[in-house]
Image (tube, rainbow, N blue to C red; front, side):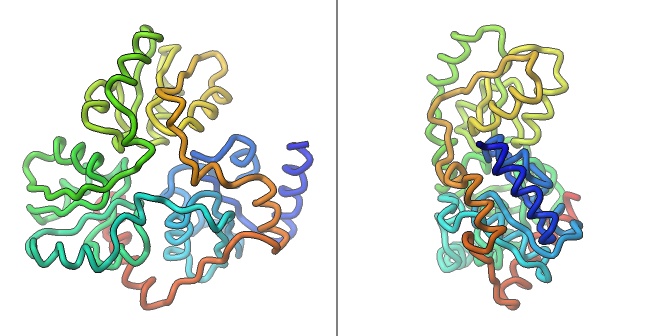
Length: 304
């Protein structure tokens, strides 16, 4: 039974001094046994202040790398070694270095959904919730935004006083959603507000009643006095909101809004990590870690 596994995990993590982090796109049964749930950067900050010596990240590789960058003294385990992020892996360091040569007066602003290696060539890092604030705050007028063209376009529209160069990268899960999907969902649920993640295409974002990060979407839906919502991000958020607000109705924008890299992690994976028979320990060379963490420190300086 699921509860039997959960009880065993909760017992063992306390005995073995382990903190479990679960990204919001994880399934409900995994979020229930986590010490903290939320967006990738928020989890990294929580890991830094958590007293436990070992951290299990139920998410994807770049998230575990970020935890290790901010907490080098801790043992960090990625719950499923095959859980990657297609967007984070779309560009490598060498490609961005060549682009920088073409635009030498542009600051490189990297979405947190990037590898540790790619962060070493970035001037500042951003999250989906802090990108607008940070791009406004940095002194540079010219910005090379990597890797997500959709989030970059959203930020560009919010910060018209800056010059942006965007690359053709992005989240394949969010990017596959089209305007027709939104129109169909609105027709099926005419009383529902449409809440969307800025990783979606511009024509999708333009139809939204609210645009924000996964945590922002959940917070908006929980606090709103409205009763019906169409959720334009990974369908796990629909499930979590159904548990949090059973008196409200939540509809997925599309049945295809599923991140298979997130869904690959299971409760037995987490248990195997605790038992030492699964997962992968994240190891970063100190030189790489020191270079990569600088852009995150800048993100904290400008965005809090």
